[in-house]
Length: 368
Image (cartoon, rainbow, N blue to C red; front, side, top):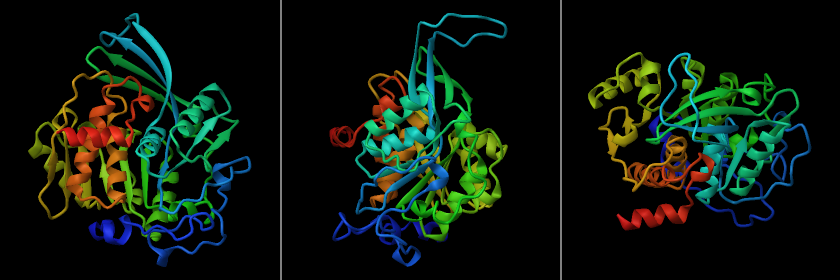
């Protein structure tokens, strides 16, 4: 799979349903690259210390999300505290989150078959995340519960205007991963229709997953959110679409991103780093997809009547874009679908609770 051509819906992103989904395994979007070794979905031992649940056979190559799962500890404040200052929060609550879990839930709520590969601790926060994922229809056959690290968590300082500042504690997201995943471990990745990655798990895990996806002709979207560090070239070499927001793009390139012209120049540097497509989330200014050698495709925001919480908006946008893409929609349609999902997301408190269902997204689009 190379560059833009690899994302052609006719080759990889418009899969044909199987004739007997009850007895056949998950099929690859490109059968030339994947030959199942068993009639049922293979085991994934590196991600599970206990026997896997009985897999639910599905006929459509799924969205596979490999990433983080957190308990998000929300505190609602009027403003950020100054150095050395203690302030009181108006409210506080703990909700399931994490970029990987958020994106998986979004895929599930949009009624697309979704698998989540990640890790939680043997604690109350892990149970909270597990229940949230299961409740959204996400398949957890490959999620691992570890005893040596707590579930990752984040402190979300939510200001009265809906903007947020987040501090992340990695926990199980950054610990206890196998150094080397076997070929069998990665078979679910090779069987995917599309793979979503973020940077809240170790880079070496993302590299192995992205490489396995590339060898099977499966497109990879890397959300740049997470660790504030350069992205290894070993990872970028296997990424089809890089998706940063403005600040992440500035950090990754060392260039200003205050204007669209500056953003365009920063994206050129990403192209030079080997990524042919860059999907930039621009907050209140919408989004833009930059494909090397083509004019950027711009998408304005779809205004929300009220903004309560922007925490999960970027994850909603990225996952909704991925779902639309794997379903064979045009890039313009993908951007519009993602913008509608994000508009609904910001109207609800909490990342995972705010993820919209497919009917709501379609109803909003039809109302415009």
